[in-house]
Image (cartoon, rainbow over all chains, first blue to last red; front, top):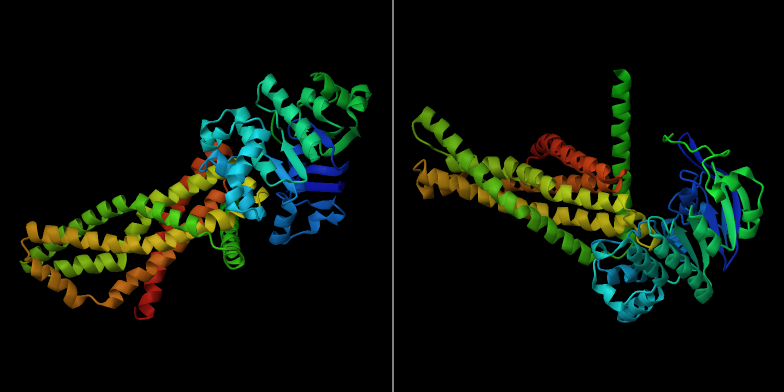
Length: 254
Length: 258
């Protein structure tokens, strides 16, 4: 289980995460909702150690990971986590197959002779044919890139998968396919998922729990049902996607 | 105005600090992880092949123009183009060979390195390396640094050779200096020390180009525009630093009698 306790993160004068406390239960999908600039990406980047928290704790299986400042131990921690990047972040100098097996070389002792089998297996898991392995990332569509990226995450068999806006930029059908995939992976592999998104449709479909992040604080944490029934005006406005309400979008970057 | 100067100085110092930390990190990973031989070999070949043609061409013509200028000037003063081989070779192996090759390598391969790493940074591929258990310093920077350190001295050797050949062609065919005279002028006045003077410089230039170009790449922010900015920034910085560094290296090496 992951427990975030009074987490704060500032970039200079800008306080992106003000006070975030959140419990992420094992084997469940937790969606973190929030508008642009609410600190969602910062939060999951702190979880995997890509960003260092300014203050607070992140407990993973009883260990506070914000205290780790040794590169080696941080690498060992990342072994447990998989991260699906928003644009896929596939290495464009490598083929799809090489991308999928990239983590195996550095994170596991799996012999190279097993790589072809793993490529086939993981691509099948995300609904892709084995012959995609020979293609270059530049030849793939947005949805395929995300799937290959997910296959790359799955190859190292992480306990927790962090999804950074998995449905953003995809058409509604492809979004739904990715949502189904996230549910499927949870059921098949029992992974803990943390999904940051502003796609309400997908969030209600995949989430066991939802947390709403607004201006660096968690405003509501509960089940999708609790979200539908809430009286909190901020959450209500976000769920209905209305331009009228207490949330006034900042049109200019601060 | 003072604020602007202060801001610029702070920026310069933070860049210097960042680059130094990256070098420190390189040393850390060099001892603690297996060396990426395949990557380093690939980078050496890429940097070498990328820059070879331009290096050959620039040094050939530099040798030619050196011979022409020296021959004409000396001819006007002494009535005979003497010591053309000595002047061409002396200028080339001590100064122009290393400096011109470094400028070409920084413009050709250095820019490519910054653009590639920069693109990886803005498309989150560097973050992806971290999440897949690989440190980008170890996987991207060290092999490229090795590439520069390995190829720049070799390219300089070729550059010197092409320059001397260019000088020979002009001396023999345009200035009517006998070929044997041109070559004797080289061998009788040039020593291993002169060669070493230029050759040692190339390692410092290579280290500097690798550091600046990789650091500019890794610290790239802000999409395609950011990649453009850091690439031009890397090339301009390296070219200026090559010339500045060249002066100090010359002073130090000369003080040591090299």
